[in-house]
Image (cartoon, rainbow, N blue to C red):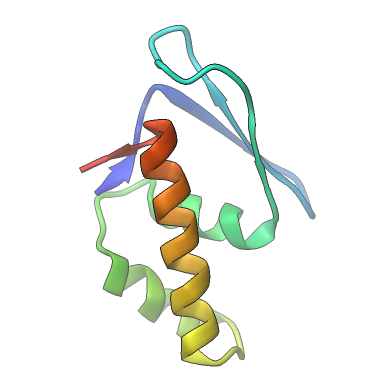
Length: 86
């Protein structure tokens, strides 16, 4: 899976924005925090849920259950808006 090229990713220190291009069916802006930004950065290349979780475990000192929940919520939301190519 990979982040759709129909969305433009913009991240700041504390906020992540996904803005659809004219080709996307979704209308609006997706706003998220740094965690969503990290997950979206992972999704710039073709990857898997498990690979994202492993990268996050190596990067952050957080329990695996919390990481898995964050990744699952982000992937669900990205799927629902059409921002994820699978």
